[in-house]
Image 1: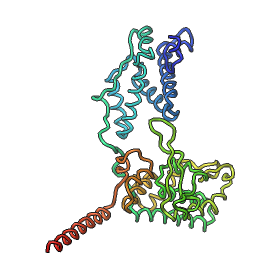
Image 2: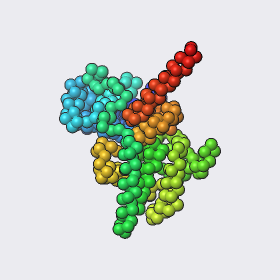
Image 3: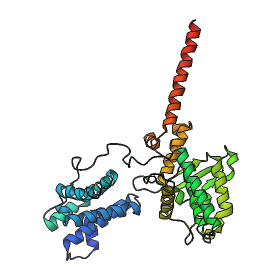
Image 4: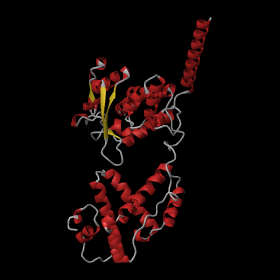
Length: 374
């Protein structure tokens, strides 16, 4: 037993580390449970940005129920989710809430951590699992985002980028100091599309993240982009991947930004962030989001269109241009082809051309066979 006391999340060890006399045993036990759960998740290699929201959600649920885990019931969960439903949360958000509660109860109900024994001794009761298939949301489809979110057509994308360029010119001609941040953001959005990046991925880029591709020397020192802040899996560390440069214009855009504009930020010399801000070393995602929303509204795009739609557009346009789906999957860092297919919203023109090509090929084959017979 002595060896087990050092295990992350082990109940007696955590309670022993606090006061020997529990003045408020219910509050202190609940707090110790959360500490143990956090330790257990840390031991599993999960990052704090995953752990902390889970802890906050469980605290929120406890405050809603106004009771402690050894008193929670399935009805409490249903009441809680009914209230959250009134806020019109997304299906994926609701599942995240339920998953946090389920995982916490899996932890405290696991006899290996002895929380059930502690609760029996202190309260004459113990926690039980209250999340089941019949009272929680199940994952019935691959994509549960808002249907209005989609890729941009090529015309829409060009319209957005042209507007961004025009806005930079307008601000610069009027001697508005905001022209330089506008230039930065316009370039950042073009790079996000050119490499199919998520917002955090392109926001966190550094100068050193580009390298040469010996198989595409025409792209010079920007033939490949090394993404270091890719989306993590199950709370792990950010995933890395390399994205090959496809569009020649993206190299020119980057070279111009680095050579002519980036250095004009006073903060640029403090680090190697590709997108420095006026006051700190790196522009924040909120500022990029506000800029995108403003330009989106000014060109009349739907409000559901956000920076992530640039990534959708990248996938769609590559598929339309005939790139192999497996290549596209590797470029955007999807583990499964089904994930890439979700992002693909090929235009009706592309589908019409594809159908026409198939029909024409079939007709040509039929004519060849007919001539052979005759």
